[in-house]
Image 1 (spheres, rainbow, N blue to C red):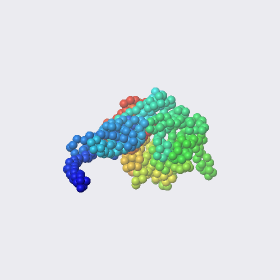
Image 2 (cartoon, one colour):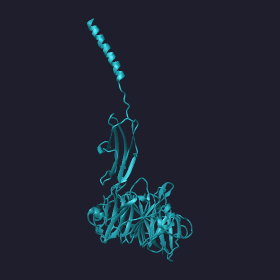
Image 3 (spheres, rainbow, N blue to C red):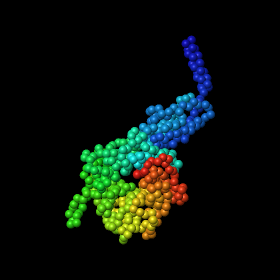
Image 4 (cartoon, rainbow, N blue to C red):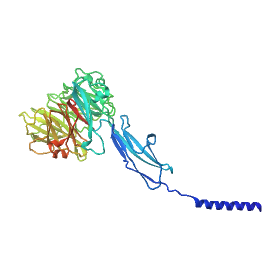
Length: 513
């Protein structure tokens, strides 16, 4: 009985204790934290500042102790501060995932969000300028900072004497040309730098303009008296044009394996029938390559000055073909591409245009007739074996001469960002005309801007189709608006900016997206 009594007392005490503990329990309201003002992704360029200022909201008034932690892929620590202000270094990865963890130190709860930071190379979205300064080649750049929208105020970065700053020495040749090319499908871009000394020609990494390969090393046997003036790289073949008209080619082992083969020291020949119909080998004697064409089919037009004709080099697969462009129906009086007769080709330019959601290629020629008049002719050239002759019109104006420069802005490279105008540089004055006007009326170019010196090079920014970079003989470089507001504004309002330093006589300009 005594044991039973003790057991009952213990049980009664335990029940009472549980009851009292239940009444004492203090439920705490846990803080809910929301994180805002962080975009899903950021796109910057080397040298830009990544600035993120998160907005942190807590849903209760009670004091909470917050701790912040930024990591890369939940792995390496990036920052322990709430806000980020970080200058993108040269060796930054092309893409990184930043994760922000906000922890309530009182409850131990952690809230997270993430963003993707994409880093573009230093010389992307930039005009690269090749000029002659102090007797040798010089590289400069005009680029814009990415802020989320493309506006003229973003063009705020000037780079001068780039190669000398990187390699510690000046270039040793005189400038000829720079040609932007890929190293294969989906690979990095490079720039072929041609100079008057064959041994000083080289390939540059387009990301940083460092020398990556010397051109003579891409030949097993260097051709005699090589003096290059143009280059063209396609997916399967690379071509080099010599001053004497020879074309040297290289076949890649695959479309994604550049610099895996050697250039042949033997120039290209074209098998064609002679006067009696026998197939004979004709060594190409090319005057120029035609750039800026839609080459998704893997071809480039070349012009043979002595034979007064265009040819195409087709290399869209592992074999190459040389052919004569074919047009089924030339309108009456139209000068054919395969025989210019007594006429002279003065200027030519390819460009992109839109054909029912499909980007297609175009060609525009300015030809001087035997009577001294000038005509402009427009072709659709998406397929070199099925060319469409669109329109041929006579030019009217004293600005026309044999030394003009022609530039046809691309239609946003097939993205419906269009510019209907073509530009002619005559001396120190830039003119424009509507290339798409399909009438029999004469072309009368209108003045766009007058510069203080001769125009020696120009290039359009094809992505948003808004800007034109113009280089002069006196070393000045200008950026002009060529969008709708540019054509409707007064002449003096068409200039966005002028580079602050003299770059030397401008020889060649390319735009790198």
